[in-house]
Length: 388
Image (cartoon, rainbow, N blue to C red; front, top):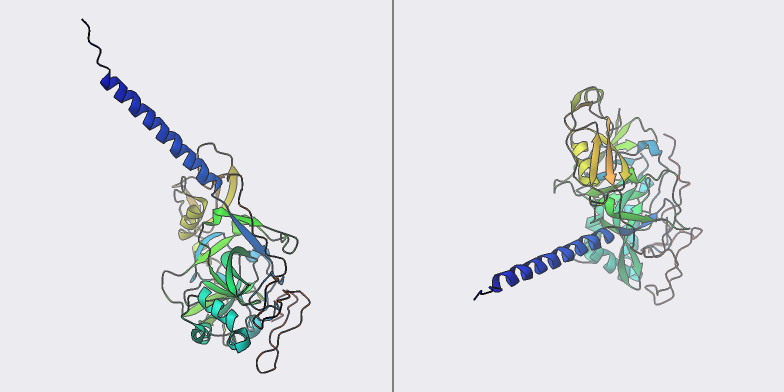
C-alpha cells in the first residue's frame, strides 16, 4: 500500500501563502508611502498679510525687499552658517526687535506672548527679551521652507509655509530662521525633505514670477556651532557683501568687497571629479554636489520602479572632471499624485482678541499698532531695496 505524506507539502503551501500575503502588504505600504510623500505647504509672499498673525496689523515689525531672482542660490537643505545664505541691507529697520519685545511684553498681549514663548520653546514670557536680543535680522535669499505659526483663539497654530525670497526674518545663534519680522510669527525648521513640499498658491499669495522649485531651500541649525558673524549678500549692491555681528541690528555692518555666496575665482577655475549621486534623493544629491562645489539643475522623468524624488541619472557622470561651480544635471523620478489638502488660513481670523473683543483679522491697509508707551512702530515698504 502506498502512503501519502501530505504534511510537508501543506507546510510549503502555507509558507508560500504567508510570504505572498506579506509581499502584498509591503507593496501596499510602499504605495501608501508614495501617496503620502507630499505635504501641503502654504505660499507666503512678500508684503502680503497672512490670515491670523501674532501681530494683528501685519507688516509693522519689518521690511521685506524685492530681490533679483538671479541672486538665488542652488536649492536644497542648507546649514545656517553658510556664507552668503542670507541677504541684508545697511538699514536697521529690516526688523524691529525692540518693537517686537514691546508688543509681547504689553500686558494686554499676555496670551499672545505666552503662546509665542511656547512656540519658541522658552520657559515663559520673562525669557522673551533675552531671546530676541540674541537674534539677527537678515533677508531670505531663496524661497525658504519653514514651520510657521498663526495665532488663533489664544493658541499658536502650526502650518507649513514657503516664504518668498526677500522676506525679512530673525535668525538664532545657529543661523535658523525663528521669527518672520513683518508679523512677529514664530518660525521653526521644516521637518520634511524639500522634495516633499507641495506648495499651494492662492488668490492672496499668487505664484510669484521668480518662483523656481529647484531653488527652494530649507535651513537647519549649523551643527550646534554658534555663528559669531553672518556674511550676507548686500541686496542693494549685490556684487558686494556685509559682515554682520550676531545679535546686532545691522548698524555696525562691515562692507565686504564681494558677495560671500559666490565662488572665488580661484575656486571656479579649478576642476574636480563629479560625485556619484544616482540613487540618492534629490535633496541628498544636491547637498553632496554642493559639498564638492557644484550646483544642480533638476529635470523630472516618470519611473515605475524608483521612489519619487530619487535621482535616476546625472550628467556629467560620476567621476568625470568638471569645473567647480558648474552645474550637474539630475534626472529625478517624478512625484506621486498629490493628495494632501492644504489648510486654507488666508481668511480673517474670527476669534477673540486678548481683551475679550472680536479679532477683526488683518488688512493690507491697516494702520500701525500703538505700543504700550503710546508710540507707533514699524512701517510698510514698497518692496524695493534702498539706494546705497
